[in-house]
Image (tube, rainbow, N blue to C red; front, side, top):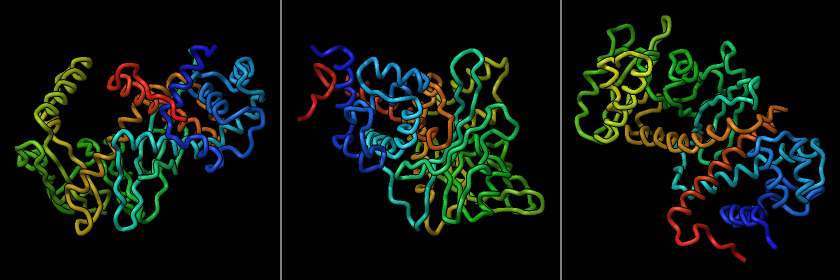
Length: 368
């Protein structure tokens, strides 16, 4: 008789790409199945560690009791270290199913989505850590990964901590919009597409001239979906850098949601949002150094929108990350742990989607 856990596992593996077991070998995650009967047992054991929050030793003990594996915690750690490329492939396949299609970057550029999240080790005394990562598009390859103490000096989100090369383009939200980080990235020969933070990135009309009239500019965008672009300058010391400010007006529904969120946040703090803050909430504004001859206003906004689509996926990762044990043994195992969390988030998203949309039993039948 098949147990309930085996049935659930069968439903879960039916959500994976058809070639998921073959990719375990071609990606280098598996060369031989020492201690495991098959690839499914290996994946199930590793996800027990990543998703269940068990230590490596406890995971090995539980896997042995369940008849999944007979391995030590040290051997399990080695398996975790090599699982990253395998899980990255599965994540990319599931993300594509969700409708996120990344265009081929023009001009040989490498687009990288930059983000960060705080995770906490289990227990009352667990430490808080900040995971900094950069995701290469369209392959979803994590090409930079760093873990710092969440409350450490200099441990916050900043573009300066991301290594770049000429030809790179960093896509980031407003938490990364600081004058020093933006200008340092541009001076290294890389480009940026960053959501504007009006308090941390003062804009001017030209080098050494008056402050840019941001309110006057955005008021030109009066209809939903209307785009605009303006030349702006950012100064640091005696040096000034020219950037492009690109904006689009939100839909009325999007505006009302943004305004309601601002008012809720202000109410919690016992204050009232500023009039200009409420006005800026009606638009999506990004600054970019990409050349106008190669990238139109709409293309820059589309690249930023793509970063936001991936951010929606990582919101699920962040909610799951607080439940598990941060595998900080080394950078390689931490990367695999991160991909494992993302894989669990994507599988959860797909299970919810097909459970809602597919009748009557709510999951795909296994293929032969």
